[in-house]
Length: 470
Image (spheres, rainbow, N blue to C red):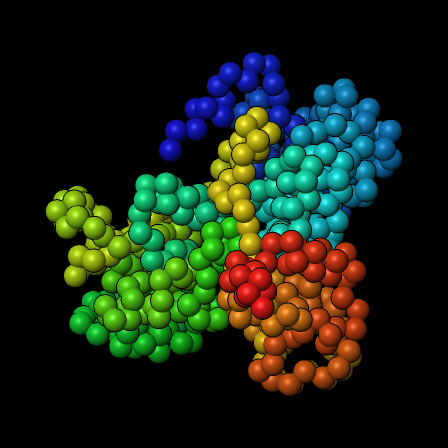
C-alpha cells in the first residue's frame, strides 16, 4: 500500500496528539516511532505514574527540559504553547491545550470512554486503541464523531484496524470473502524430536502432534485431534473475542460460533480450514470472523499475531498461477487465503493519526453497526453481591467466559462484557447464563448510556429490518 499521500502537500502542518495510558507498552511503541516523524508530535501525555512515564521518555531520548509535569490547566496550556510536552496524571487536564487527535490506550472501559467522549465533544478526533472501550461505546462514539464532523477510528498497528484495512482492500478488489480473522497472540511451536509444544514461555508434552502436521482428507478430524493434543495450553483469550467484536462492528462479518473455532492450523492450511463445511472446512456459513492458533516448527516464520482473509477463487488459471508463486490456495482450488503476518503496534499508528487529521479518513470501516456483541457467560453460579473484577494481561472478567454473539441473536438486555466488568451482581446468575444489564446492581452510568445510545442509533441491519417489518 502506498502511504505517500499522507505526507504529501502538508506544507508546515504538524499533527499534534494527546495520549492516554502513556506509560504502557503500546504507548511506548508509538512514542518511539514519533521521534522519527517531524510532522507528528506528542502534546499532552496522560498516565497515573508520572515518574515511570518520565523515565520511559528519557530512555527514548527526550531531554528533561522537554518534559513538564503539569497539575493545572494553565501549566498544560503554557507548556504546549512553548513547544514542550505536558505530562499529566489528571485526565481532566487533557483538553487544556490545543492538539488534533486523542490516542486512547488506557484499556479502562469507563475512564477511556470518558476521555474519548470529552475529546470529541471538544472538537478533537479520536484514535481508539482500547478495544475494551470500543466494544461497549464504539457505536455511540462513532455517531458522536459523525455528528460533529470528526473522525473516530481504530488505530493501525492493532489487529482490529489491520484486519479492517485488509478486508476493505479485498472488498475494493471485488474478492468474494468467506472468512476473516487473526491468529492468537503467540504461536504454537512444535519440537517433533522432544515431543513438546511451546507457547511463549510455557512448554507442555504433545507427542501426538508430530503425527498431525498434515491435514489429511478429514480436516475437521485432524483439527479435533490437534486440539486434544494441546489441551494443556489455554485457548480463547478474552482479548481475542474483544478484538473480533470490534472488527465485526466495522465489517459486518460475524462469529460462526460464539466461542469461535480456534483451529490449530499451519499458515499454508488456512484456505483449507476456513472452507464451508460442505467443502470440508469448519464454517457453517460464509461471512465469518474467527481466530486460529498458528502451528509451526522451530525456525519457521511466525504469523506474529497477523490477520487474514479467505476468499472464494474464480478463474482457476489465475489462482493456480498464484499457487505456483507460493500463495495459499486450498487443495480443491476453490478457496485462497491472503494474509499479513504482523501487527506492529504503535509503530504503525502514525498512519491512522495522519490519515484522520490531514485527510479526514478513518482506518477502515465508515459505517459501524451492531453486527456482534462481546458478552459473558457465567462459568459457575455467581451469587448476588459478586464483584466482577477485571484483570490480567487479557483483561479477563473473573468467573466469566467471554463469548461473541451475532448481533441479531443477542438478547435486548444482554450486558456487554466490559459494561459488566467492575460492576456488582444485584442477583445470582446461574452457570451458563449470559449476564444481563438487569443483573448488574451498579453499572457505570456513562458506559450504560453510551451502550444504549449506540445500539439504538446503529443496530444490526438484520435487527433493523425485522423491526421495520414488525
